[in-house]
Amino acid sequence: MRKSIVLFFLLIGYCSVYAQADSIALCGFPSRATLSEFPRGNDSLQDFLKANIHYPEAAKQDSIETVVYVSFVVEQDGTISGVNIQQGDAQHPAFSTEVVRVIQCMPKWIPASANGKAISMNYTIPIHFKR
Image (cartoon, rainbow, N blue to C red; front, side, top):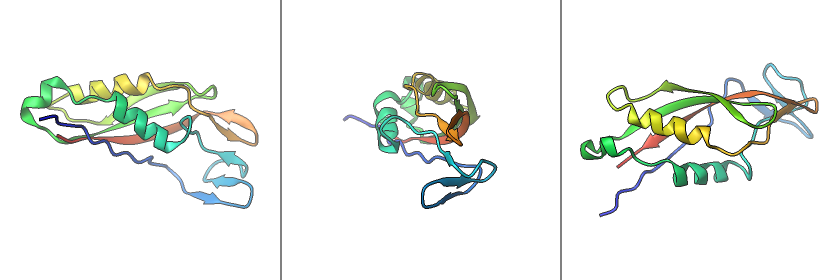
């Protein structure tokens, strides 16, 4: 019987986003700002995570379900840096190790911008592991 990982993620923001006619106003950002985006959008990000994150072998016998919260920075050139586990499973660090591995190998994102200039942006996403 094949067991699968079900990943569910949400982008967690630190401020509200308000859609306007031709721009997005972000709390703490200039009025003409856009968010960083994974190539081809959030559905593609979810597909990337599903295809690349694997349930750790070390935890298979325990059939653990857990959530790992990971933060990272999308830099001005779209590269990923500052990958950091915000909350993980202390008894099974293999989950955190797997999440860091996959986040670090993500392709370049479309960077955020403010007034037409690329800016760095922080993201935090939860990765759910289910057996």
